[in-house]
Structures are given as structure tokens and as C-alpha cells.
Image 1 (cartoon, rainbow, N blue to C red):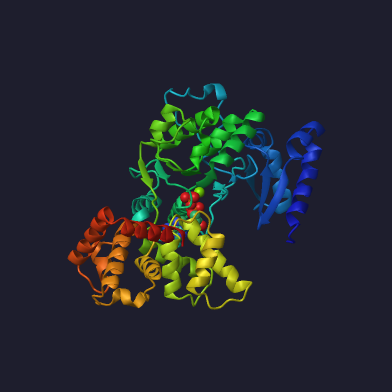
Image 2 (cartoon, helix red, strand yellow):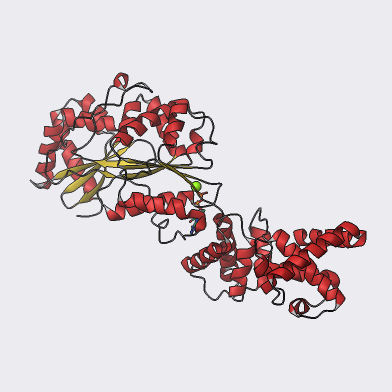
Length: 477
Ligand code: ADP
Ligand code: MG
């Protein structure tokens, strides 16, 4: 069959249908239907709303069946894709579609849970067609394989993996993931959805952003289809809503979510929310919804530590096909791009641009520094011991190599002590680590050096001025 075969098939069906119903009904119920695919003897139609599906099923089932079989033979089947709003489509034909309830019958926000929905038969009662296919909206690149594990995300990540193995059945329902921007909430949400689907193909997962959810709700409300909207989400096994904080102050949408939540949770279906604030800090939410956010597990994602940053940098370089970047540059990036994974990505993209457009094959630390300054915004730098030693040596006009010798020259001893003092102040390194990088000094020596600097600072004004100046240089270099 040619690619446009489905259009021909549907046009032929329409001819038969047109001959058998009034032109008004034809116009109302059939002209808005769009054929979108033909696979073997399965024709897929896109319907504007779930309501169309009900009307077709209730009134035109046998006519459709006759038409399809006439054109495609006894094997002919139909599948539906339903567009609620621009972004979510579902392919129905289900044995388990929840009937649209009268909105009046929707439980009040505090009311008892809705009863078990009666099942309705597949509209075409044709065996082999009994699958609900729902567009998951999952991005295959945001998988667990690419989601680097670290102390910063261990809890949320393991909970996500447990959920994927057994959605709705763990204690983590809902899973509420929160963190500031750029730390992996969206990535992890997709990864859980993808993993769930790869373990059990027939599990129905939908990832939706709160903005899409609100937009769909608004559209549904405009066309008095709120029950369709709610029923669509009640079909799911796993519902993931990203950036749920955007529902703040949206009372009506929250109420719809409340019904969806209750319905799904009672049936052991999984809910996952991502938010920029914890359930305790988030505002503008109905108390009853808020308390439900806390029913399961709230897990935060933190800023990755240096080791994890290095792993992430390696992973991103690999994914982007960048090789040959020296460990020194990687270390530099890990030390200086510290706020979020999003920033690490910006740095990698800047490197990629240098390689691709400016044909720079040798990425040096200096170049990396320039790129970070230029392309990575709001970067507050975590200082490295090495950086501090360099700034201190520059200040005293000493060669940096001298920093790690055991020379007892007075000015060198003092520079070394000051570098140790700032290393303690501005890095997360332990005394032993600082000692190891300062000419193999032990913990006690580092401690003694820091105390000496602190004491001198109190009694010697010139010394204090020097310290202040070095601190200024450290912060602005
Ligand atoms: P958030 O939703 O919290 O703002 P994202 O999930 O959009 O953050 O993450 C920002 C970027 O960083 C994404 O491109 C994502 O792939 C990447 N990222 C975040 N965490 C990790 C991780 N642990 N390993 C690899 N990449 C990550
Ligand atoms: Mg996000």
C-alpha cells in the first residue's frame, strides 16, 4: 500500500458511510475524523475528543464495521488516536476504557472515591484490537543509562528504579522529586517512565508537563469536556507530571488532579511529580492535594559532588562524540562549573562549538576558562587548592612549584600557610587533602598553619590587608 493508502481507504469507507446516514450527522461526526495510518489491515483514525469515540461506538459501530470490512476485507481493523489537546494523543480501542462519567457524578473533592468503573467493550469488538496505546511523550535519550548516579541523586534514583520494576506497588506512591533547576528532575522522570515501559511493555505511561496539563484542562473546560479530560488520565498506569509547581493557584486544575490522583492511587497506579520545591515548601496548593503529595516518598536531587561531576562530564563528552579532552581540562570544568548539571552541559556545548566551528582541536585549560566565562551563566566557582596556590604565589611573586617544596624560607612558609588557610576556607577538602597537595604536610601541620594565619590576622594590620587582597583576587580571578 502506498503511503497515502490510508487516505484512499478512509475515503472509500466514507463513501459507504455517507450513503447510509444523514448529511448532518455525516458532517458532524465523520468530517472531523482524520485517517493517519494504515498498517497491514489496521487503519488508524484520529478523533478530536474522547466524545467522538463514544458517539462512534454508540451509534455507528456496525456501519463502520461494515465499511471497513468491505474495503479492507474480513481482517479489517480500526484504531483510534484521540487528541485532547495539541500534545497528548491516545490510541484507543480498549477493553478497559473507563466510561465518561457525568460530571455531576464526579465525587466532591472530599467525597468518597469513585466506584470501580464498569468496563466497556471494544468499539469494534474485533479480537486483536484490544490494546490501549497512549502516546507516552517520553524522550528516549533521557534514560537511566545516561543518568549518572551519585550521592546527590541516590535516593530518588533507587526509588525510581524500584517503581519501574513494580509501578504503583511500592511505598513510593506518589514519588515526589524536587530540586532547584538543572539538577535532573525531568531527566529522572523520563528515565523512570522509559524503564517502566521497557520492563513491562503493556504498562501505560504518560509524561506531561504541568503546563500541558493546565492547557489541556483549559481546552477541555472550554468545550465542556472536563470529564473526558479526567477520564483520560484515569486510564493510565503511570502518570508523571513535571514542574507541578506551575499548578500553584490553579484551583480548578488542582481539583481535576485531585480526582485523578484519588482514582489512580486507589487502584495502585503510580503517580510521579517533579517540582522545584518540596511538598512542605510549595505554596498555592489545596491542602488535600498537598497532603497527598506527602503520602509516598519525597526525594530531592542535590548538586553533584566533584566525583559525580567528573563522571557526568565524561558521559556528556561521550554522548556528544567529543574525544581527546585532557583530564586537566575535565578537572578544571569539574572544579569551576559547580551549580548544576545544566551548566555542565552548557560548558560541553561550548567546547563542542569550539571544536566544530572554530576547528580547535586542542582544548586547553585557558580555552576552557574562556568558554566558561563566556557561555556558562551564573557560574560561581568552587575553588581548587591548585587555583588558590597559584593566586597566592602570584600575589607574593613566587613560582608555584615552590609551594609544594619543603623549603623553610620565611616568605615561602607564610605563602604556604596562607594557601592552606584559604584552601580550608574555600574548598570542601579535608585537612589531609590540603596537606597532601601542599608538599606532603600532615593534618597537624595544616591545622597549625591555619591557626597561625588566624592569629596573625588578628594582630597584624598589614598582614590582614594582604589577606583581604588575596581573598578579593581569589573571588574575582
Ligand atoms: P531539571 O528538570 O531538574 O531542571 P533536567 O532534568 O532538565 O533538570 O536536567 C538538566 C540537564 O542535565 C539535562 O540535559 C539532563 O540530561 C542533565 N542531567 C541532569 N542530571 C543528570 C545526571 N545525573 N546524569 C547525566 N545527566 C544529567
Ligand atoms: Mg525540568
